[in-house]
Image 1: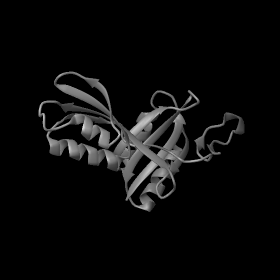
Image 2: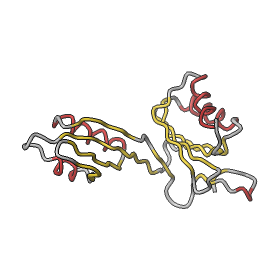
Image 3: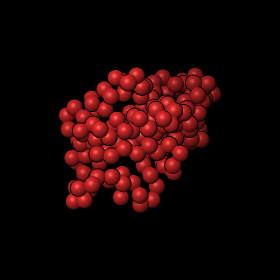
Image 4: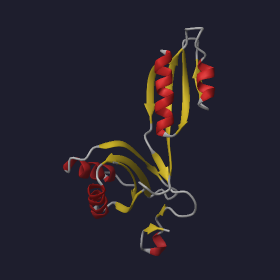
Length: 173
């Protein structure tokens, strides 16, 4: 089963290596991984997607919480959450029968760079939407290059992962 896990961790050298190392040592694959600073520059938010049973992912989450750099862990699988991907996609111009603009407009994709031969598109949407759009470009024979972010997630509404140093009890607020 696919699991989306969000982790708050110290924004320090080596923190990401320790998290990735924990997965590697236990033979778990990370499908996608994103990490960046949060509203607090001393804390990073890591979002990863992995496959496993409920028991295996529960074990992963417990092991993550034991890492010194990890503040909090939230498995968003099965819970309401927003999940999007960003992709930059290079497509080739050439065939007058194929309208890159029409393909892009159908998926609410915008052009961010263009010359006579190549256009770079920016896609923001779900992973399934991105897979469908990429398949459309492949079928049209215009796809040249793809760079995608992987899942970035957040819980809807007021509840979420937050580190509040004043509480001295990191976790959901």
